[in-house]
Length: 66
Ligand SMILES: [Zn+2]
Image (cartoon, rainbow, N blue to C red; front, side, top):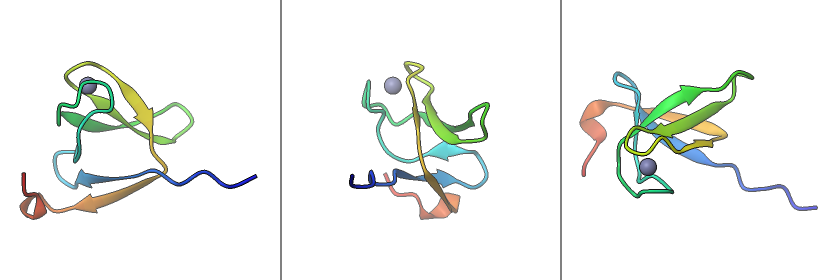
């Protein structure tokens, strides 16, 4: 059985916002959340969709280009 690819997101170190569009509504208004089992995830602030991620890479605010 092949191991599933690890899902990685980039999060802003200061604000906690996460880069990239929501899988459900495609808006870029996602924030980092932690689940009850301490797993990381992202939550869309626009539609409430959440999904788990395996790795979080913190980036500085100035590195973001939209
Ligand atoms: Zn959404």
